Length: 331
Ligand code: PBG
Image (cartoon, rainbow, N blue to C red):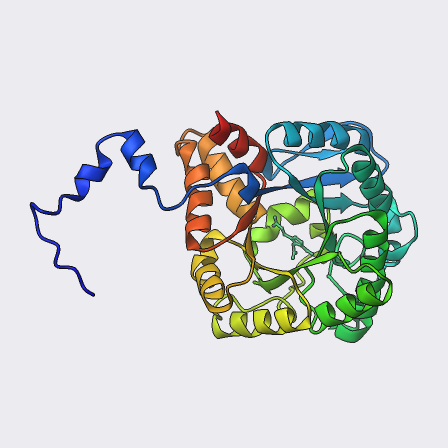
């Protein structure tokens, strides 16, 4: 029923009189449980170091990572996503180190879950930290091989599920990998391992700082991920990707990047009504953070960006600002 709204019967400003009333009728609220903190852990490294293109974000050796995770938990965050920074001497064309038993990330996951059993740990499934060409899969000539790559991703998934990862997040965009990984998990009795599919992952320039952070940008050079990540102009295709991943056994789907793709988040949540996450990626974070540091933008833009992502339909958000924002909203 359309309502006939007329001034002065209707004065929308009545509900904007003060912050208590504004809060009372607020439609979108961001809480700590909506936030996931990504964290970079560096192999053969003690201490912590800055990342030039990501203000305030650090690479941690495992000992410092454990301290950082304690801080993240104390800030009210329950979920982290770990990304390894691998020795360059261990990178090769097929990403062999990704599936080595007791490799750095599998050891790190064990240590983290031993010290913080209650934390929800998301492990990235992809080969780009391990390949000397920086692609997310196995390269033959200039072509990233879909089916060969899936085999390795499946082994990587079993290794990290066994190490104790609660959630596996394939971020590679190979076709069919969710189904194959799900079957392998069922067969090996990892029935409770959650699959968070990077379902609609665009071929975005906003990933640049992340590639610096995990030191894959020089490996990738001028090569592009356009043969597997989505065309930035496509929308119907995102629905197709998500439908396939749900049917193959994804528990949660993700859209990435977030702020430039709010329409996609909205469309997917509206169409499928399944748990839908969004990744506020490195470039989104860095541009806001740098402008805040320069005092060109008020620091409130970070919270505003996250609320807009939630308002679009995201159930949870990966953000490099998660810890700080969580502190801010709990104070
Ligand atoms: C690759 C991967 C990327 C990110 C997460 N996993 C980059 C890429 O696809 O090249 C980007 C995250 C970010 O920019 O913060 N498997």
